[in-house]
Length: 212
Image 1 (cartoon, rainbow, N blue to C red):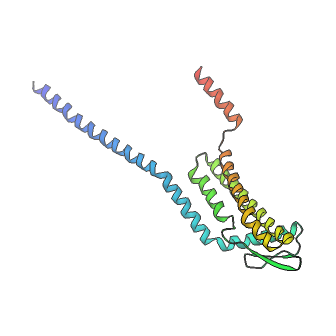
Image 2 (cartoon, helix red, strand yellow; image 1 turned 30 degrees about the horizontal axis):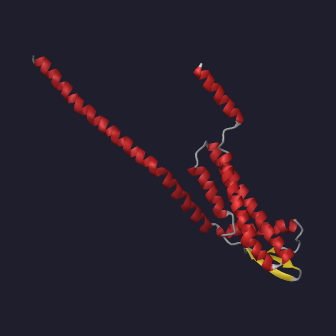
Image 3 (tube, rainbow, N blue to C red; image 1 turned 45 degrees about the vertical axis):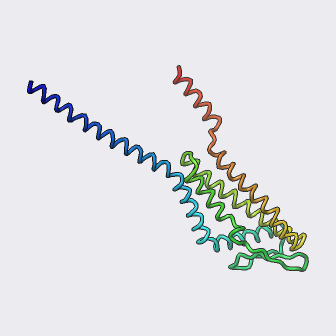
């Protein structure tokens, strides 16, 4: 009788211990779910903070480099009198004998939108490491080269049609082009994450083999 009583006591003590361990596991699972639920928001805030900080810290050297690249490309495409004022973000050109300047401001630069696209590819969108890094590099190249093309087009309009037409083109045509460029960058980030045809066929064969 005493042995049976001891065994029952041991069993009764083990049940509360098992229940405590189960409660701890459930609590840890809930905590992990909360962390996972908040992780996307934290990554978005991280991208916003890094983009803002980079736009403030690197705006001057990047806009100076973009001004130099704009002047170089304008000269390379036939506007031989176009120059970048050394050490500034100003590009100098002529409409006939009338000089004009365009200033590459941070809002005209590809710095912030390129940094944002890279951050979205690296930290927010899913995919393999190759897809994340490749998407970031391709998006930055697309946005940088597209923005340079837009700036050179502004210089050409100023040279051919004068300052009022140049300002109108910058405000309207350049804005539409910027939105189209941003849409192209978004589609590019999606495209690099789509499965290739060879991978889809291989996955289909693996599913058929596992089914058999």
